[in-house]
Image (cartoon, rainbow, N blue to C red; front, side, top):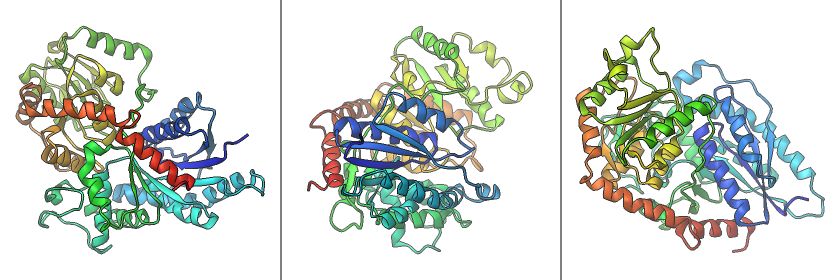
Amino acid sequence: MKNNAELIFIPSPGIGHLTSSLEFAQLLINRDNHFSVTILSIKIPLNPFSDSYIKSVLASQPQINLIDLPLVELPPQELIAKSFEHYICTFMESLKPHVKATLQNILSSYPRSESQPVVGLVLDLFCLSMVDVGNELGIPSYMFMTSSVAFSAFMLSLLNREIENVFNDSEPDLLIPGFPDPVPPSVLPDAAFNKDGGYAAFYKLAQRFLDTKGIIVNSFSDLEKYAIDALSDGQSQAPPIYAVGPLIDLKGPPNPNLDQAQHDKILKWLDEQTPSSVMFLCFGSMGGFAPSQTREIALALQSSGVRFLWAMRSPPTADNVDRTLPEGFLEWMKGRGMICEWAPQVEVLAHKAIGGFVSHCGWNSILESLWFGVPILTWPIYAEQQLNAFWLVRQYGLAVELRLDYRRSSDFVTAKEIEEGLKQLMDKDNAVHKNVTEMKEKARKAVLTSGSSFISVGKLIDNILGRK
């Protein structure tokens, strides 16, 4: 017997998008027993791990159903090199007939006498073209934003420009509603500068924000009050904003590249370190560096003398260690540091030995660092990470600046810069430590009963169920 209000989630298959989407689905069904949830799982060879992750999460959630969408032919590979955003949006367009057929099957499974049983589509940013399918079938759409309210504000600000008006670095600083200070163009996402479909893809996605009944954001009021107020002032075109986070998988997503022995070895090594003494370096699922840049990081670690855990993605092998690391580095680091391919990030950030986090500033990583009160040294690499880093450092004092506008294709960070950043991050008198500790308390209060995110989820449920 199905519950009498079904929500259909269509998350993007990227692991960074899936984790918070699935956390939100679980939060809803635990909060209100009217709901059941169906996840439409998108298959894409670029993310083979996503399928096993969804299944592992849903194994203990009988109220969440999973339907695999059929495999479809991918857009031409050369599109990725031109613009990942254009590539993924083109791919999503090709899925629309399959999504429509799947939704029709779901609707036909209910008795005809039952009023609209599917009460909403919950769509990832990159799945917003599915609004058209919902409209055809009389199902309202909500967007689930896996990044910040401030990023949502940036996207909506594109609608004040023209679709042909691609950004360039020489523009003056931008006044964006939701940002208290002018924003330099250098910290905008790569897509903002992309003439090969990236900017146009962002612009079209921003237009679809306005076709939703609400924007659900993995954030919380105390962190983003300024941006929430700016989008809720009556002047903005934005639909209602529901800040429902932080949504964090506290177990951390399982990783096929991290076996249990390696997992245990990492945590055992951390157990042996003194509190707040270890730097954790981790740059996300897509964050890697050329050997020359990796070498600079290693030199900085040696010069600074900090203890470290470095998740490198592609640790050096006997064939390339001389090009990747300074001579004798592996011998030098014994007892001082540890290099691994992957690390259980949530468990690492929760560990008392961790004193700082050198991060790519992906939104999930930011929320996890704030949840555990670990200050960040900013090294943004892709997507909206430069904007995240600017916002963290310049507007809220919640991170130490290494770079705000780093671009992997053209920039190089010297060992001296990295060493200086590490020293600032380890300085307990730095105001960032106090600010992050205060925000940790606010993050945890937000999700408690009567907290701001708890209240926001209640308002969203009332909207979905038509109670108000």
